[in-house]
Length: 289
Image 1 (spheres, helix red, strand yellow):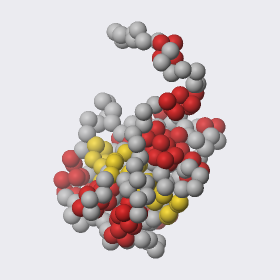
Image 2 (cartoon, helix red, strand yellow; image 1 turned 90 degrees about the horizontal axis):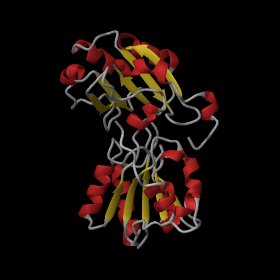
Image 3 (cartoon, one colour; image 1 turned 135 degrees about the vertical axis):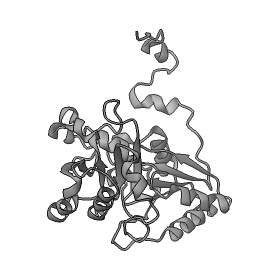
Image 4 (spheres, one colour; image 1 turned 30 degrees about the horizontal axis):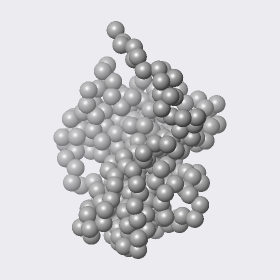
């Protein structure tokens, strides 16, 4: 039985003055974004509506935004007037700033007394190098705050009707990256263990090396007929979903070239997609998500 709360909307209204809608948030005690601080903030998987309130608050109070390639540019229109925008995107196979230079730049801006918003796609600590950047800030004595974001490996899959866990499918899931710093298949991953450790594998940045990864997983005991689903541009109006099986994954990528960024799901979590595919073309017309 579900307990009904005794708190009503009307009783909340009594404490919020006459403000309505989003204006109510102006009265909330958001944390102070002080000069010389760096906020490492996750912007979510792409849809602007999936950003957090703290993310929006940081946009409205920062002096400079250092943003990644995976941040939806439409979000930047909500940055306060007068704030500077600095692009620091890293994309595989394309000219990109090195990580050390990005960390040094964050430190320089903070030392200059700027309120620095480091805006990252997804979640800063989920293959977002947020750990490396916050480590550099800590060593330099720069105060910082981490604001988690919705990761594409969870929220993005939800937009494709794929529950990352389900009691009838999997009680465990493995998250991993499909390439290392060199762009190749990660060599320091125990693929033998990964192959059979969990019913579902979710791979970030896994399209490029998917054929090699699939072969390695099958040799280690992963069934050749396991479903493989690729969700490109998750949560965005141009989201697309492609499906194959593990034994045909490499050829599928060569022949169809699914767009990136994409999340790759291996396992039967995607079996639910046909029933749960809620993100219809009509809904995609809304750019907020």
